[in-house]
Amino acid sequence: MGEKSTNFKFPKFKDLILFESDDLIVVNKPPFIPSLDERGGEGVNVLRMAKQYHEDAQICHRIDKETSGLLLIAKNPQTYRAVSIEFEKRRVKKIYHAIIGGNHVFENLKVDLPILNLGNKNVTIDKANGKTAETWFNSLTYFKHYTLVECQPVTGRMHQIRIHLATQHASIVGDDLYKGKPVYLSQIKRGYTLGKEKEELPIMKRFALHAKKLTLRLDGIELSFEAPYPKDFATLLKQLERFDT
Image (cartoon, rainbow, N blue to C red; front, side):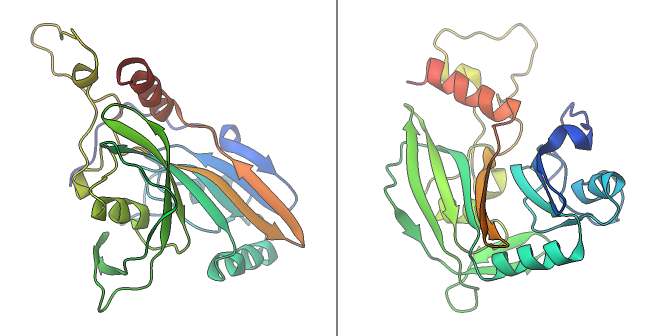
């Protein structure tokens, strides 16, 4: 699958910060910036940006390159270890929002299909050889042809939310790897016409997944963070509210 073309401009790291203490930085990761080095080890990523801001910075977990939202960054080894343990013991509560194709009523739907990592960023559902994977889904907003869904992964497997939704015939819009189709304004706006010799672009140029909320305990204190939607996610929701209700 080729890279999706964007006119994306890299922001300043300081502008991404939602919270900072002596031990922890919480950022709202924009889409199209990887959390860590990709193959080749070149280019901009959140870790490299964070280390320029604070030399001992370490990212405590990762989210997909196209996914936006919350990332925790430790400012020292002790905090990195403490946060890592919370993730390993599955004590961190993670909530994502996704826009999916179709009208789906999910009320505390539990999907616990094992995921096998095939390498090269490919995974599959494999009940015999896959690793335990558990996600809970709740529908938040219904449109005519789409649904805004809250996703709570208990485990942290690669592509977990994306493939679990696909098993429910509810792929995330724009997620072509899992047969999710992009949203075009012409599909939802009655009477919409495109100018001559122009190719219509999707409203959102990536899959619609955002790491919205995160709660954990550090040093006996409960910390809870929430990341606002980035512009592209908010725009898609606005257009659906306007033309697909």
